[in-house]
Amino acid sequence: MLGVGQEVSRTFRGLFARTYASLRERFVFKFSLRTTLLVGTAVRLLLMPFTAHPFDVYAWYMYCMDVLSHGFDFSVLKSVYSLWLLTLTPIAFVYGFLSSATGWGATAVDALPASFNPHYGIAWVPGPLFNTLVKVPMLLADVGTALVLYRLMKRFSKTELAEKVVALFYLNPISIWISSGWGQNDAIPAFFTVLSVYLLLGDRVVPSAISLLFATLFKVYPAAFIIPASVYLFKRGKQKKLLKYLPFFIVPYSIFLVSSGVQAVNNLSSLILGFFLPRGALNGVFGFGLTYWSWSMVVPLDPNIWAPVSALLMTVLFSISLYFVLKARFDDPLKGLTMAAYLVAAAFFLSSNLVSEARFVWLLPFLVLLVGEGVVSVKLFGLISLTAFLYTQKNFPYYLLPVATLNSDVLSPLFRIAAPFGDVVQGALLPSSAGAVILAALGTLFSMLILMTSFKVLRGVEPGRPPNRTFTGKPVGTEATCTKLRLLWKFPFHRFTS
Image (tube, rainbow, N blue to C red):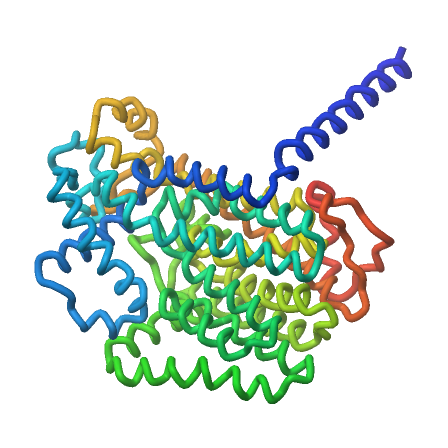
């Protein structure tokens, strides 16, 4: 009887595996580029009017209101986010015209039920019209990133594989949510960074440097890509191109900082210090976001003790990443450059005490390229994306407040359900004990998955080593004995993500 039961169990497991594989091939990986773009764009357009991060979109709204009230202020050119503020300026005038014509505007927080208050000093909830307009640049950036990824994979691989990579990016819940649900603008620097990769691999170093400059003028952190880009050019024997590449990025950015005066320099200094010398507590919490430091929401940590620890950890991890980047041979240009960029970014994700979920959007294109290059399995990539997406739901149901501008009664049951998971502390809405444990667990899981991916990338950096995975996640060849740092890979969770 036991033998019969085992046979039946094996039969059902095999049937389930075949059914799952068939459904995955049919409904996920059979999308053409056109279908992927149509489906992904449709989902984004449905989300854009009715969802928004309460604080971020409120900040965009207040800037636009200031433009409409006082006109364009040239002092915004001194901001390290100058290109984003310039992007918001025409949006402000379009919104002002359409809002006056239609009567569609924002709703005061005081006019909503008290339980709907998102706190943090937020006074207005922008309506669907503003939410839609302000997210258009992010939608265009996502489309642009998808098209550049397609061109990259089509050039270095097969068309079918290129379509799969685009589907993994453009239909990814976290990609959709950050740009069209949350309304954060990290999709724009992500696009310009991927475009910089494409141009660099095509030996168009000047346009590549300018594209990276644009990315950096939206958000500072894409400047980190200059490290793998410079090493790639040097190791490929393109020293003359490197001497053209660096000045076209460094000189214009230096001119921008000098001409902007103290404001931009101070902003940039504080941002850099925040990356390499992590800041203290924010709203009484030392660490949060996609990181194991989220446990500080459960067990308070003294910033005076743990900030230096985080800084030391970042220094060590960045040094390790830089060592392997310098060790890479870049025989496969796309694979080598992608792995190098990932390693530099991973040092930040694995050490910083404040890791916003929106930052993951910049890393996402490199991850999908690693999947396409056979370095990372689809299963591991899916777990990373799902974990990041679940963490972003910490703002539930406050990201639905734009719906309240139309009908607040619809949201009342959702706020009653969410009430036990949030507490108001000194004007800030923070997770309750139960909510903090959930977020800390998700943050830790994300860090573990990024660490696992890092070890896979480190193995791939070894000169002459073939990829250890195909796109479907099936092993190819045999794995050499893990040595040095890769011994840490030998822990039980490995079998769930291999």
